[in-house]
Image 1 (cartoon, rainbow, N blue to C red):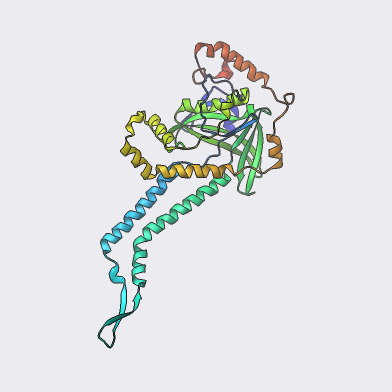
Image 2 (cartoon, rainbow, N blue to C red; image 1 turned 90 degrees about the vertical axis):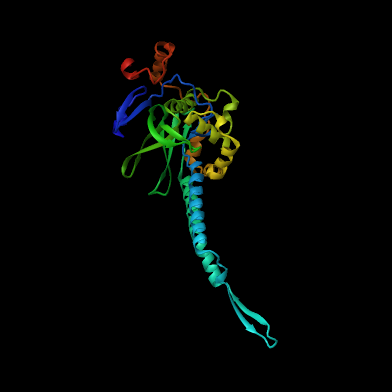
Amino acid sequence: MNQALSYFAGQKVKGNGVKKLILSPLPIATNFKKAHSARSILKRNYTYIDVGGRVANVSLGLTLSAYLAFGLILSLLIYAFVGDFTPQIKEHVVRDIYGVDVVLKTEYAGFIMSMLMMFLPLIFMLMICLSSIIREMKLAKRSTAFRFHRQRREVAMCQWDEELQKVVVTYQPWEAMFAWVEDKNARLTTAAPAKSVLVIGGTRESMVGSQWVCQTIPALDKESAVMEWEAIRSFMEDGVREDSELADHPPKMTMQRVMEDYCITSKQPMTIFTQKKRLWWAISGRRLGVLLYNFMMRFERQQDVVDPTFEAWSLPLSDCDSQQPSAALKKYNMWLKRNEYAKGLNIQTIGDVKDKYSL
């Protein structure tokens, strides 16, 4: 990431065929509205917010449903090919002295084996589904969020270290964090297609040298990604203005949210969801995906970083100990507000801020 060292907010760079809009270092005002319900924020209070680190996705339900449907179809095909399995039940019959047939023993082994063979594809797919859920739970255990401390104006970058087998925390100044928006196909947590991602990261020193640590947050488009960033930036600069902003983050996943995101990405009205289509969406895996998402989110929230230093760092500071924005950030924001944003421009249209306003 040596190339990133030359980045500056407002720049537009291109590398490996990907266009990036740089938002930070030096997180200047964007003149965008902040996302009303930021998807990236997992936890929020008056002192800090936790951003990223999310593994749960509704698409898991779609994948598992596809596996189960495939296994069920194979089992039905076997039944259709073989037919009735009752001839596999063998009875040992003898005739008593009165000429009456008496069943001494009934063998079900052949019948049971035949039934197992028929349901083997479905059982195999069930095992794959169970394995997928366990794998996702392990990923959730290792997923970590970045904690943005408003009063310290620092970011705790938490990352799972494979060598140490624990979460390692690196602290970096807020104004030195890297952040950009780029075009990239991804999936929102509601399984709707995303066209852009917000990347937030920094470097940490390890035994093998400098390592890049980042959070990648899918967004509907570039504007939505910038609004996600603005929600983070406005918290760090302005704090929580209303108690309503402390509502549970992220909100509980519902089928309504899934359908709304689909309509936004496909640019269709909600009226396309007739009762039949709603039923199909529920039984085709999305309902299962919603249930798994809410379960995984509860599981992810339990995976807090257990570190006395981190816990002490997360505590609120007194007003006299709170850090203030740098002089450079204040000057750039003042110049932008007076010369650029007053004209209705925003961070996408102002160009290279560093070239325009050199300190």
